[in-house]
Image 1 (cartoon, rainbow, N blue to C red):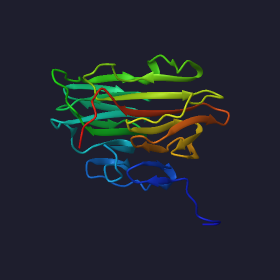
Image 2 (cartoon, helix red, strand yellow):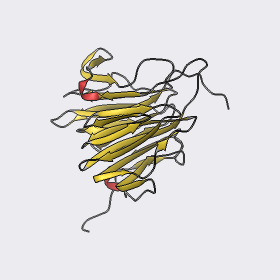
Image 3 (cartoon, one colour):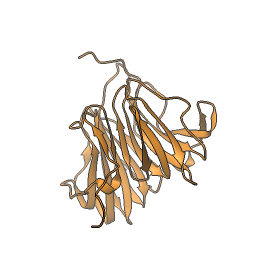
Image 4 (cartoon, one colour):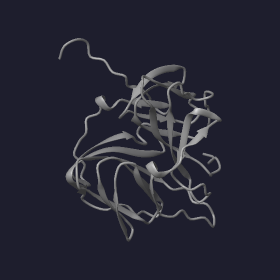
Length: 250
């Protein structure tokens, strides 16, 4: 090692975190075979969910089914490679940009046919009377882009249905050259954001910092936040946002 050790990581427990990929040690997990995974965020940090970034070798797979609890929901997104994914009684081949949402009581398993990467999200589902979410398969690359906040250089995609049965939403934001948020957001929902491509500058609380592909950002409730793209290419990230539920009083 030459020079001074440094990091772009910024962690404030119970508030926010920016986790650069180069600072994470991926490890063997008991529920994976021929895969290495990294926990990007968990309740230990203060988050209301857990997220993993998983890198699979050829024929990497789950050693046991995931999810299936009466109050557990899962979301799986393929960043690279090709995977055979089973959810409930259905099995599909998922490539780059494909995803599946599994509601409570539905189990997920996967096996890779090549080197690949998966983003996996797990959360406790908050029920709503007379509403039940359903299994959703999709391919983000086939979904249309929509202008965000009326801006032509900030586009978005919605990956899950706009239905109150779902207590979580997954979206992709794309910042074209010169693109930025139209204002600094401060709200009670928490976000998890996985950078898919490019480079940007991200505001967390009162400090701007650089982010790039592979980084993960967690934003707790009421953290001031905003972003803009930098460099010559496009900047995009997949993010989660809790929705459709009232505030839970402690």
